[in-house]
Image (cartoon, rainbow, N blue to C red; front, side, top):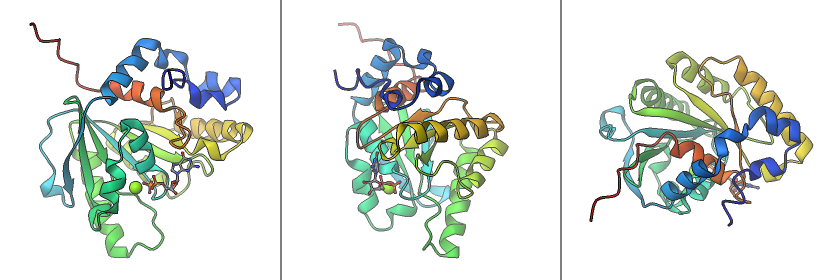
Length: 242
Ligand SMILES: Nc1nc2c(ncn2[C@@H]2O[C@H](COP(=O)(O)OP(=O)(O)O)[C@@H](O)[C@H]2O)c(=O)[nH]1
Ligand SMILES: [Mg+2]
């Protein structure tokens, strides 16, 4: 049960019209949800932590990048997706925070954790290094299928996020907004944020029109996001003959 029942549960808190606007049911049919569940039940293995463009690993699998301002709930979301604590662990390692971390999921998908932006205390030099590395990765990686752009439900898209949206638009990199911490806002306010985010995305070239509403804490919307991401993974090999 659990996840299955929660496939649409980002929806449960949102008013009906918002659900119909931004959350077409077809994305979450039972088959897609099951494919997502199966993929994310597979082993997730840390592959590399990379601090420079020259050190990027070879492109072996379709990649999904997770990006957002620091504290948006990125580690929590990826941990909820994978049911593992690995990202929390890596982010506790000093020096890892400015790295791009690669995790291979079930031999079919690479989850790529980009360092958070908009950290007020970051030095100019750190911001410059971050920008160069992330920009290089986002604009030159052929295997990158989609960027999941995490946005805090309490804030919506802000000027801190817009340079990233512009970067993706200019690079024609498909990106999709994932609202985080939906448990922190009342349904009406969540509906309002979802509506205004959707309206802004409509004006942007490379933005995926559908957004995901998630709460890592309450595990809302996790099964639906898994379903979406499984749709971007390498096709599962047929079962080997016995
Ligand atoms: N209420 C609520 N808090 C969350 C949720 N996800 C993360 N947080 C909190 O937000 C803070 C930042 O989370 P973290 O995952 O480390 O963010 P990151 O910096 O983007 O990796 C932590 O205090 C988390 O406990 C959520 O779904 N709901
Ligand atoms: Mg983190």
